[in-house]
Length: 74
Image: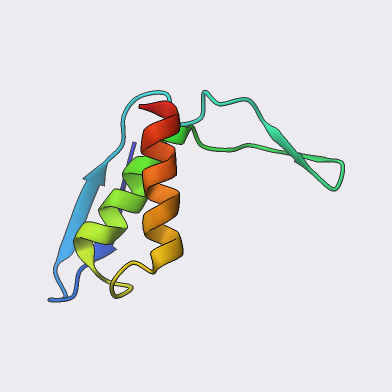
């Protein structure tokens, strides 16, 4: 699986995700089952967005969330 994102220089970047993106168990929000991505996929998506810089620099809370994902799952 992959996604594309436009970087700060208007280039289209192709970001590959590992197998098992949707292997994580579903979550429940307000009684509705929601298909969620795996922690690895979330980490890779955040890293791809950070590399592209399309949304500007990561906020301190984004950096902390990325570090927490890394520490907890990897």
